[in-house]
Amino acid sequence: MIVDPITNPYAPGAGQRPPELAGRDEQLRAFDVVLERIARGRSERSIVLTGLRGVGKTVLLNALRSAAVRGGWGTGKFEARPDQRLRRPLAAAAHQAVRELGHPRGEDVDHVLGIVKSFALREAPSGARLRDRWQPGIDVPAVPGRADSGDIEIDLVELFTDIGGLAADVGKGVAVFVDEMQDLDADDVSALCAACHEISQTGLPVIVVGAGLPHLPAVLSASKSYSERLFRYQRIDRLPRAAADRALVGPAAEEGCAFMPEALDAMYAVTAGYPYFIQAYGKVVWDVAPVSPITADDIRVAAPQAESELAVGFFGSRFERATPAEREYLRAMADAAIVGSSEGQADSSGDVAADGGSAAYDNGAELSAVPTSAVAAVLGRKPQSLSPARDALIKKGLIYSGERGQIAFTVPHFGRYLRAQA
Figure (tube, rainbow, N blue to C red):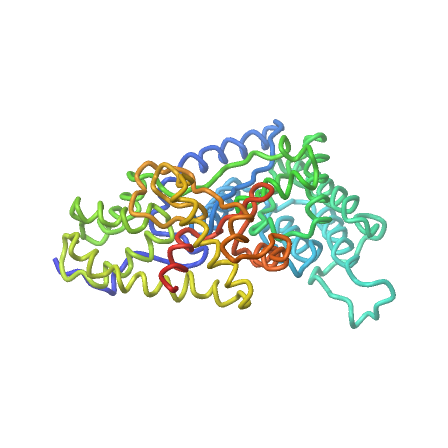
């Protein structure tokens, strides 16, 4: 059989659902239980998904939202940004969630939408002219005196309480989905934790489902000490071998194509089981392979093109966001990882610290971080002098700090990319 590029099933893209959502059955089943328990009035914690970029957090977040929609829940989603406060995007998400609930009493819906509008409008600076005020697009009058105090913590509790009451009337729930949750402002993180804490105590059917980088739990813990007990944390990692094979074989079979066993071996060696890499390599391999079944030789022929596309779109686009000083810091991290591996700091998979680049992936060991002091040593500088570059890279989402004095790349294989560029 000829492999036709027109029927290529693989879909590399930011947040784009792959044709086969492999390896996430456990999370989907657990979320179905959460939805059913809350619908029956049982207490459940909100959920936080964490992981490196490229492991499919956004895809899974969207899949969980789809499950909530199928259950008749009201849902809303937004992506946090470092330059935006919480009120506007959360108001838009709440607006959508209220509309999705399908509450039969229009006056009750309008009342809650008026509260959502009051919550949103409170962001406008005091004394701002009407034409300068942001309008949330809610066609009902604002309800004064509710969720509009100006204290985001108080207002968020009141907003969730009123939305939760509306959901309870129809025996459903409301789920707010927050992507890139680590980018929320510190005050907004604190308010969101406090609101989740209050709602969980009252038993109202409202949950927050967040997704973010591996240091998100530390961000939440720094905001509220009880956040460790407030959320159910789920680490989303690269796929085990069987799931990675299924992500390739299932879509191919739908198009009447197959992979030879040695081709699957080769694909796992180059992708390490990272979902984004599976889709990226899978798409190029399909376009390059002349006939089915796809062989290991097809993988070898396609690998340079796939790596070139990743170097531009996945790695290069991120590297270009860094200033010269920040790029110097990133390269020093990659070099420090090599030094660390020679001193016995490599993990058991053969992966060097702070990096996902190695030919030995099969045991799925955790990736490691490098000490900030090691980076400073590579550059011949004092660690304190490098703090501005490190902090800027953290804000840009290129590195993260899971614990004090340790840093790691947010993008798998980034260290290998930097060393190849050097």
